[in-house]
Figure 1 (cartoon, rainbow, N blue to C red):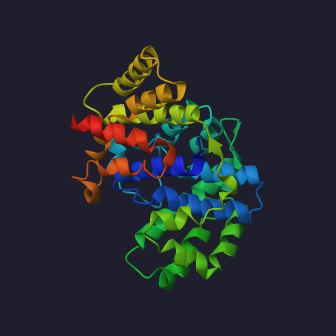
Figure 2: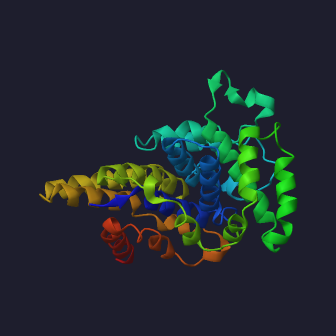
Length: 309
């Protein structure tokens, strides 16, 4: 069974963007920018991979109702606890646990080198890259109605002005090199998700097991239950019961695992009810985000049918 990691996390990032009116394409654009910064900074392949994956999910902890309605601002509020919440969510998934420290500190200012540590703990270099990429995308979003080429010098100047205080000079140097490439600015104009995700080399695209995807679905179920009217842990309990019943019926291990995942995700449409205005009313559109993962299309079909019964 071939489940690709980038496609799986990209689907989650699209669902996050769907339910948060502030975040349209924000995660994938931030990942696109962060990967270019990491590569230009001569990160190792492992560091590039972690930077990319963390950027795809960096605001996963910011989906509560209060933070959902806060406008994105270039001058961020460091007191926002979404980074800590996101880090805890990722820490709960063994496959994604290495991304947790990156997300926890992705709003850490460089502060003339003091941002190398927080409370005695080393801040990953990847966190500072994701922070720069995140702020750059937020800034670009403010100029979305303008021709990006005509305002890029202004954007560059604002970012570079944050050197030493907000950003590690090493990564500002990488940004300066990237900013000289017109292809980068032309690409960042796109409003199509696939334009960004397809530009990322598949060297970082590991295959994951169905058990790995079950763990990711468990994390998503926790988020779903936060928006659902059915109560805390509803989806988690439905997932466990579904898997138990499948085993009692003597189904194959793969079938049991898929049915458990279906139980975990069965209430995914509760997220669509909180969707951004552009998606309001498209309750079933949330299932479309799972279809690119070929190995679990049957699960998406089961869940859709279950909601229609």
